[in-house]
Length: 66
Image (cartoon, rainbow, N blue to C red; front, side, top):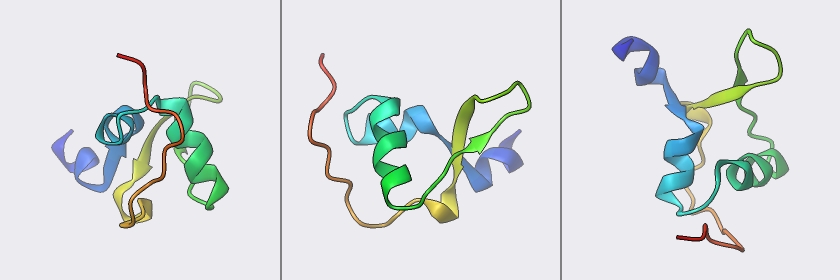
């Protein structure tokens, strides 16, 4: 499992880093051409390839409510 997460990062972790909702991250990244990895249970995304995650900060218009 550690090898798997070496190359991938869960969407919820990226969202937490930017203090927003995972769906917000999915929308922002889709807009810049970064797409998640979908699992074999249908149209469910759980992670991004680490190499696809942009180094630049992500501009989140609406932070997650606390």
